Length: 137
Image (tube, rainbow, N blue to C red):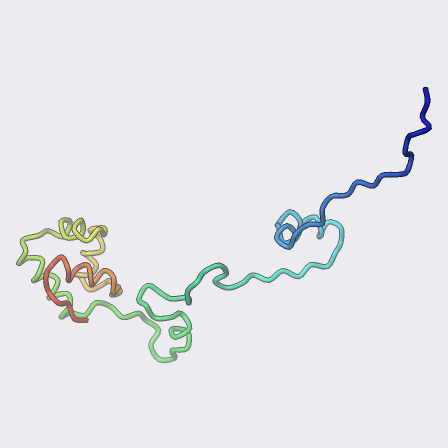
């Protein structure tokens, strides 16, 4: 056996360096904790969302936090309740039929007509389109 042409230098095989995404992976963070490396983790507010934090009413959460006098959401006014009820009965629709026409749950219509709902502009526009009336807050 002749091994004269063999290369006997040491060969080092390494893995690729991890990317930033891999370094931020939960498993990588846990591995670093086990090794005793100092870790700084920050939970970002609204991370990955392309919108300002808003409530269902369209008011921003910051405005509600800054508000000092009233700590409640606006509810459906009595005039709006009456407008919805009158328009629905004029069309001879039940609450369930109206809800199905606007693609909402019947409970939503019930809350609007009882005055317990927080007005949502999208729901109000659907209601006004199906009922054929202009609804005013």
